[in-house]
Length: 131
Image (cartoon, rainbow, N blue to C red):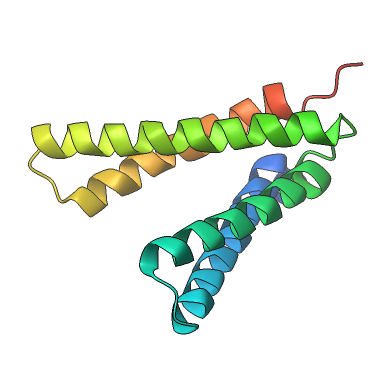
């Protein structure tokens, strides 16, 4: 029972919930902006910007409970988002060209690896308060 309680308090579970909430914001805003007549690309950018701000706030304040400098952390977070997106795109492109699996399956696998990598980077580098 104690292990379950510890897991429910764990940052990885909170990080997963934060990711799911951000995913829902991304898709909700995307659908709304698309419905309002914007293009897919504009809708994607607006939705991603909104979900990034939500995810940053949830991770900083709820998951990692950081007291570090918010602007510095936000800039590091945005850099991680750009880097992670680039790695995802390149990895999926490479794997699709070399493995006989559907792209959507390969993307899921890449995103699972990046989920844990991004968690560690945020925990150890971005939201790690120096004491």
